[in-house]
Amino acid sequence: MLSIKNLNAWYGESHVLHGVNLDVKRGELVTILGRNGAGKTTTLRAIMGIMDKRSGSIRLNDQETVGMAPHRIPRLGVVYCPEERAVFRSLSVTENLMLPPKLAQGGMSLDEIYTLFPNLRERSASSGGNLSGGEQQMLAIARILRTGAQLILLDEPTEGLAPVIVQQIGQAIRTLKERGFTIVLVEQNFRFATKVADRHYVMEHGCVVDQLSADEARLDPARIARRLGV
Ligand code: ATP
Image 1 (cartoon, rainbow, N blue to C red):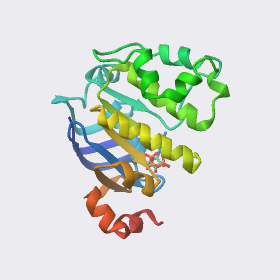
Image 2: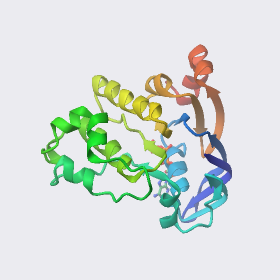
Image 3: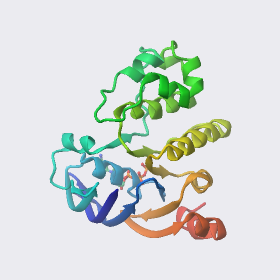
Image 4: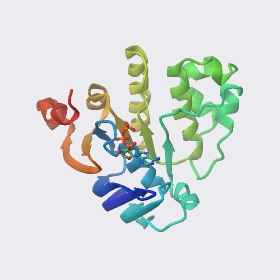
C-alpha cells in the first residue's frame, strides 16, 4: 500500500531525511520508533507532501507521489493525524466530526463513528475545549475516519496521556486495524508500540537503522531500547 524508496527530504536548506526505505502492506500496523529529532514526524510529513523538497520515491497504492501537488495526495486515501490533535475547542464533538469532508468512498457516518467510539457519543454535545486530553485524542482519530482514507498516519497519539487513557487509545487503534485500516504509528512510547504493532522501523539521524517484527521486538526488547536510550 505504501512503498518508500531512498527518500530524502529538506526543510529549506536543512537536509533531514537521508535515504529512508519503508514498506507497509495493506492492513498492517507499523510503527516508526526513534528518539526526539530522529526524523519520524518528517517521514509522515514527507508522505503527505508537506515538505519544502523531497526526492526518491513514495508510492501510495502504486501511484508515485514525489512530484505530485500536495493537495492531490489525500485523494489517494491517506490521512495524517498530527501530534497537536487540533480539535476545534469552541465546537461540539458532533460539529468537530462533521467538519472534514468525505474525500473518498467509505467515509464513515456519524453513527458508525459513535458505534466505534461509544465514549465520544456520550460526550457528543460537549465542546472540544471541555474534553480531556484522551478524549481529544480519540476525537482527532475519530474525525479522520470521516475522510474514508484507508491509510492512517498517527503521530504520537499517546503523548502526554495517563496510562489508563493510553490503554483506551491502544484499544481504539486495534479496533481500526480489525476494521481493515492500514496504520503507520509514530511513537516514543516503546511499550505501547510493542503492544499494538505488527512490525517496527527504528530511525536515527534521518535514516532507518533497524526493522523488526513484533515477535523479534518481544524476544529482544533491548535491541530497540538501546536505540531509544531507554
Ligand atoms: P520528535 O519526536 O521530536 O518530533 P522526530 O523523530 O519526529 O522527533 P522530526 O520532527 O522529524 O523528528 O525532526 C527531524 C529533524 O528535523 C530534527 O533535527 C529537527 O530539528 C528538524 N526539524 C524539524 N522540524 C523542522 C522545521 N520546521 N525546520 C527545520 N528543521 C526542522
